[in-house]
Amino acid sequence: MTIYTTGQTRLYRQVVADLILDEGYRRFAYADPLSQLYKQLRNKSQWGMKPARELLPPGTDWTKGSPWTVGIGYTKGVTVDSTMEQKQAEKITEGHVAELDAALYRALPWYAEASFVTKTVLINMAYNMGLHGLLQFRNTLAFMSQGNWAKAAANMRQSLWAKQVEERARRLITRIETQTIPAEYAV
Image (tube, rainbow, N blue to C red; front, side, top):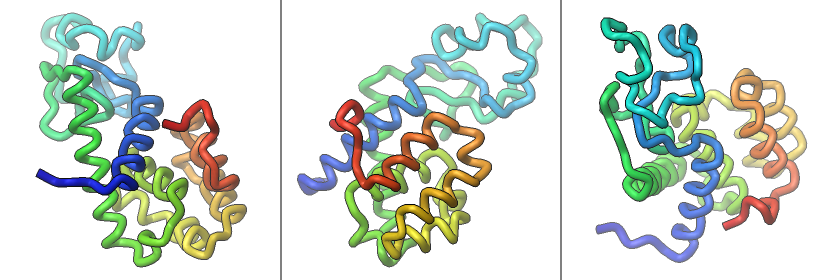
């Protein structure tokens, strides 16, 4: 069993709360929003609220919805029939957040000295696009390491990621620029 420090516990709780806002919680598996299957769907609001097999006609090629997602943006080992209760989803998400935090310590030499706010943004982005995807933001990360929040935010704003995850990106970019977490999002 891993014992977290008070600072880590606070960080992980904040990021999990942010991820629930950004990813949402879904009890039932749903097709990836970028998949061929998802693009063909009608009534997308039902996805994740009912078993996937109830939402499409028999004979549907389920593989065209991969990767399937359940819980709070969880995809590892998820199938069309997967389900996850909210407490389980939160526990799995916290474990993944801890793994990403450790991976960021290894990948970015300056991460250990990064602000609490910066860490929430980096973990959130890594959760969304994977560590490898986050590390492609070379200029943004360089500006963050220098504490140049305006340039880091400007680079984030210009990315394809920001266009794809609009509201999430706006919140995270504002955090980087201001180095604060607005009260309505603070845990």
